[in-house]
Amino acid sequence: MMKMLRRLMKDEKGQGMVEYGLIISLIAVAVIAALVVLGPKIATLFNTVANNIN
Image: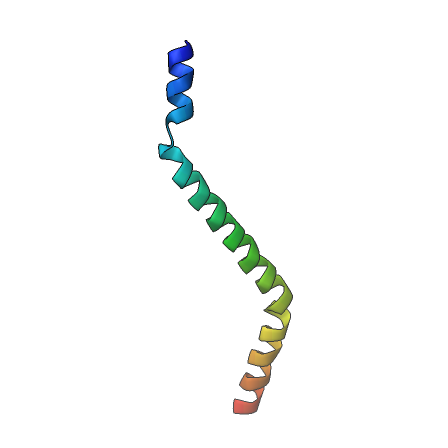
């Protein structure tokens, strides 16, 4: 049992994937926050441009 626990503690294969997952989730949160904050401003800009074209 102790050998298996020691082997699991030394095994670092999944560690990189967990770190990549955390980075991707942080980027996703940042993008969602930026869209929530900037979304109405961007919509207003596109509506202004569309109205000026017509």
